[in-house]
Image 1 (tube, rainbow, N blue to C red):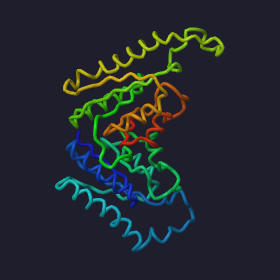
Image 2 (cartoon, rainbow, N blue to C red):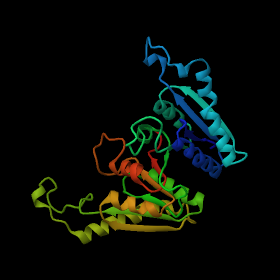
Image 3 (cartoon, one colour):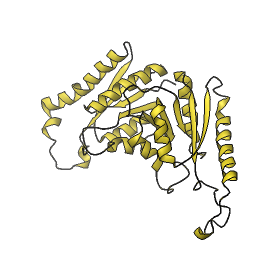
Image 4 (cartoon, rainbow, N blue to C red):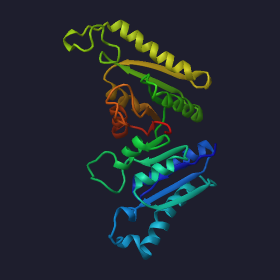
Length: 293
């Protein structure tokens, strides 16, 4: 497999920072880097509307050769000899990046783009791509040079298996330890010993629940240890509120890996609340893994 790492650029500082990380990721994997720059909307979606000045004549040339060219130069300066290609497309960034993600090993974006409100912690393209992209998405955020282990958020769900496999592979690739963290509390699944439909008759056997959660963590990791025997794994079972515990743990990690959806939430949601919290607030880059569909 020689699928490239793709990086979305828009000329923002966050986008150029993503280029640096994407170049490192491509080099680490031994694959090309593909720079993706999308601008404007497709004409078919705006019938009868004249393209704005920046999309015509010399303005268009600047879009084609300006930001993408600067990003390419930056990637070569970061990793000399790296194979770099460019894709400049007129279209909505989310739609373009989603299409590009179908044939990518990893998509990388900055946490904030040029559009949106300054008070937002995360750009809308990053959030939507995490929900709709067809390959793992890395959002570059947090400390500028994160170090430490790879942090994996384990939820024991079938959908989360792809995130576990990805985290093991990333730890092996980086020669880093893996902290596999499963956070539980009395609201965890199977916590109710009585009728779950009667909120007034909740009886929780905490010791039994803790053992169930430990078994879930051990069984999840056992399915992947054999494929990566050299990865040093620290299973970490924590009784706490899930989002605050993972956010705190991200402060010691070089990378946090999470599935797009866990056991909780509504079935129709494409991106769970834990994933969204990490994308908005984690102290290191975050990878959301949901696989291809």
